[in-house]
Amino acid sequence: MLLAIADCNNFYASCERVFQPQYINRPVVVLSNNDGCVVARSNEAKALGIAMGVPYWQVSQLIEKNKVAVFSSNYQLYGDMSARVMQMLAQNAYEIEIYSIDEAFLKFEIQHDNVSSIIAKADMIRKNIEQGTGIPISIGIAPSKTLAKLSNHIAKKISKTGSFAIIHPLEEKELLSKLSVEELWGIGPAYYRKLKSYGIDTVWQLMQKPEGWMRKQFTVQGLRLLKELRGEPCIGFEEDPTERQNMVVSRAFRRDVYKIEELKEAISHFAERMAEKLRKYNQIATHISIFLLVNPYKNIPDYKGPRYFSQSGQLAISSSNATEIIQLSKQLLQLCFREGLNYKKAGIMAWGLQKKEGLQMSIFENEAKHLRMTKIMTCFDQMNQKFGKGTLSTAAATVTSHNRWQRKEEHRSNRYTTSWAELLEVNANHPLQIKMNRGQK
DNA sequence: TCTGGGGTCCTAGGACCC
DNA sequence: TCTGGGGTCCTAGGACCC
Image (tube, rainbow, N blue to C red; front, side, top):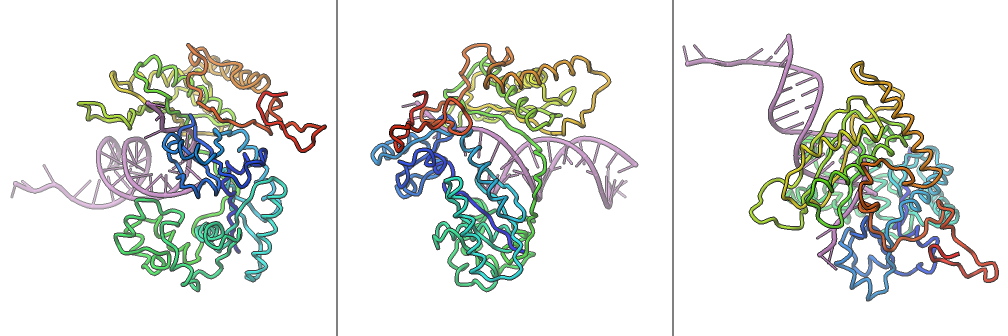
């Protein structure tokens, strides 16, 4: 049995190009929340030396000089395009595991190991997906997930063929001796430094190390990696992803925040979003944590204390109700807060998640009140779905200015596929001329 | 003077991923 | 001036138990 990983090329940038084809073959970048960092780049933008994760303001001159197209993140568009790609991939594979917004593992039923027929099948899938969705993808094939990821890397960066397969890794000395361990799935900066300190630079060198040594130096994760590289699959294929164990809602502030009142408002807003997210996945939380981060980029004179504060607590009744989660979050904030520090980011985490059906009531709590709240929340969701996000909100989360905790997004494109008001318009008199401006009728 | 041994559960923190 | 957000897995070590 062989595995494949299908990976969308420069996914966010590619999504933007589908609806604005004038940016094909031109440098494109997509920014993170608050237009903070560069999180996606077209090949042309990569060639200009714009690094992944670099703060926007550090490259804004370079971007202007080279007429790079800049987009704020448009998660609704990317989420919808992702669903289309995944649906098509599922039709082409025997089994599929959606791994992230732009990647999926596929299982092929291939009886023989004729490389050219395997590649032909991958090429066909790539062609279908690009035709059907406008998104270019790459495919790597191998007996294990780690090797499939490596094949995908080769398909994109080295052979540049779009599809690549490693069938018998132990016979690939020449190829694997040229690849740095840095490219491996599961090797980050810390492990890379450690491997180098032992004189291990290439994938082939790593493959020669004894299993016991890897286990000792890099825990069971290292051992699994080694086995996977030798073609023995150790990382399971999960068609039905297990339910989430944690959920996080957090945001960096656009300016430093000092006052507890402001943090209270932000935390309430996050708590409301969290409750919404829980209800969307039909889950309830047993525990809530909140955390505060002091601006890591600024030095505070005479302060050597911690820059991360967190507090957790248990909900009286496991819940996805905004009011109950907000109430606990505010109590936790009181315990967390320290006067005189400049906070840059805050967030809330829900954990101990359960399926909603399994809800256990505590005999000491007011069940009737909880059930009434649950009904109100259902009503909330229906209203917001019908009349648009934010139509209804709890008072705690909207004390003052409405959009204070909303992100900055000065370059967002239209939500072409999920919003009636932002559909792509084609001018019937000039069929090739497409209107792009948001709000323009 | 001499202070066991073995287990489980929980949490914080590190490392990784996209 | 301006520096993202959301996840998972693993381990060590403390608390607690018998």
